[in-house]
Length: 138
Image (cartoon, rainbow, N blue to C red; front, top):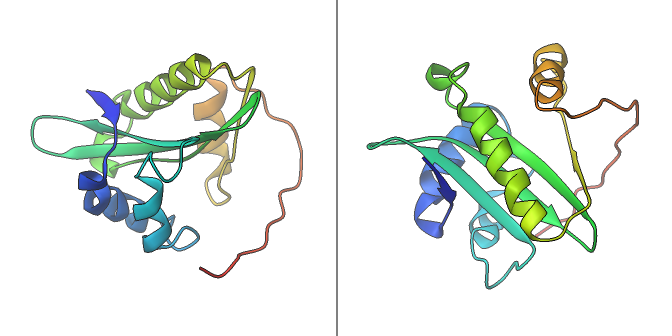
C-alpha cells in the first residue's frame, strides 16, 4: 500500500535513506520538518508499506507548473517487486492533482545505468544536463 507519509514515519524513512547514503544531503531536522505539510505546503513524502514495515519512500515538491521527484528509495529486499514503480506512479498522480504540467527528477550517480533504466521504464526521458548545488546551513 502507498500512502502519504507523516511525522510518525520519520524513523523508517531516515533508516531507508541512510542505508542508501541519501540522508546526509537532507539532514535529519530538515527531513522531520518536511514531513509536516503545515510547514511545507508544496512538499510531500510517500511511503510504501506492508502490514509490518515501511518498504520504501519517495519525495516530491512543486511550484506553479513544475514538479520534482526525488529520494526514491526501497529496501533492498523489496526491490524488483514493483514497490518503487508504485511509489513513483502515486507521486506522479499526486503532482497531477496539484495541476503540475511537467515532472522532473534527479538521478543519483553511482548506479546510473540501473536508475536511468528504472525511470525510463516509467516513461521519463533522459536529458543530458548538469546539476550543481550549494548546501545551506540549517
